[in-house]
Image (cartoon, rainbow, N blue to C red; front, side, top):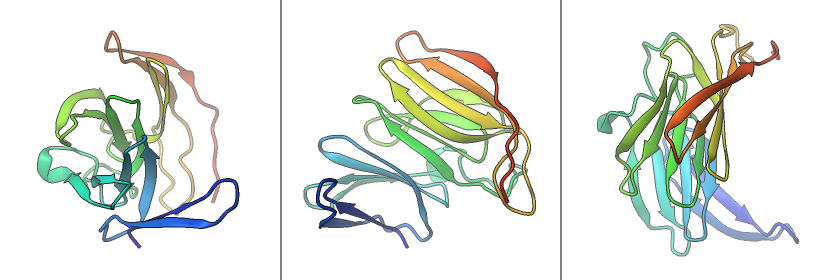
Length: 171
């Protein structure tokens, strides 16, 4: 629990293991040339220097990030997605918020807020941040059912709904 292990993509050989100090499972990771960014199931986000494993910062609900909240209406109240675009870190989770974080781990801005939804994925492509939300949960476990796909233009700060996702259910 709370460890990220790095392997050589060509050989499959072990390279390094990073202790994230998460008390639970790490759900999402992203990297740049210097740092590893990790988001765990308790809603915390970590920035770790890859060369020596030094923790640069840890942030979460104590810093105003509403990723973890037992009042969100879902049983998946954790940080599900994290992406770094070369300059900014974006994080989202079970409370329907997407945040742009500062280099020190604070909130630079709230990009999206829909408290009755659940952000399932983030992806960066140039100046666009794409994310998908879900508006219905399966209380017996499994995958969220339906929602919308959005794109956020990082240069203009505008969010556009791209359309409804097809209903999906996996248990």
